[in-house]
Image (cartoon, rainbow, N blue to C red):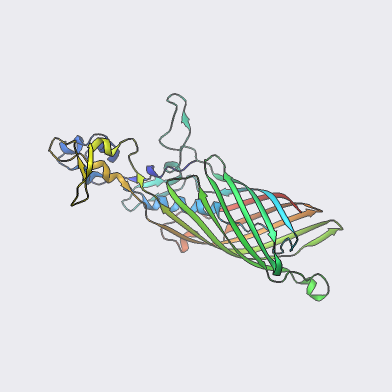
Length: 345
């Protein structure tokens, strides 16, 4: 499931029959025979496919505000292990501007290894329907109802990690007795998560949330704490330079001699049969359009604590269709199941 955005490619118009932009890069003379220039037959980015994949990945790795509105307290510290299972639209297809239909998780992620060739397949025929993230999280209470949290997690079946931090402010923390004691805890907070271990694009998410919770004592040493909240999520995805023909070395193909001192274009030693420079593969490098996504999420959860040990669960879901305010998004609403086990110190 590691990302392969170099496969999210659209073919240029006017291709000779039976060829592709990747085939032209391997054998530019095919374009010459058709009376065309290899430079005019470069691969193009499938921007809508990239946008949808980044949106769904961003939803999965975003800050989840997985704690009640009440903090650990000034002297408190909590350490926990967290497992998150995020639904993605694994078989969803998007129609690009040229009418091409692309299954972005099939095309945009690495599949299984062919046991006969010992190579990865060119398409992921069975992408995971759930993204699994396993994290270690630490929380520390501060004066005036503030709390800081840090998290580091691994995304299952990939080589990617996600890390970040949160800040939480419990507005009504401290009421325990009398009439104010029936008032639930209310907090506001925010967090940031960023993806690492991926050289193809940069993905960062930020979120702001409001939560309400109320601890319910069960016995002297145990309590249940239901909590509910709303979150506004922002997803920022930026592509690095993508080589749509990674099996072709543009420098070797052109016999690169340096850059033209006036035009800045590559000077090639290798020529086509027309006498032109064999430099068409340089045009197969591109970046995707920037991705900026906004989503509304609802959260409901339950924590159980017995003395220093606690367990928790939380469910997160899109409150509105992501397509409502994000043009080009086609997938259904997503959800996440969070599970947690930890200890207070």
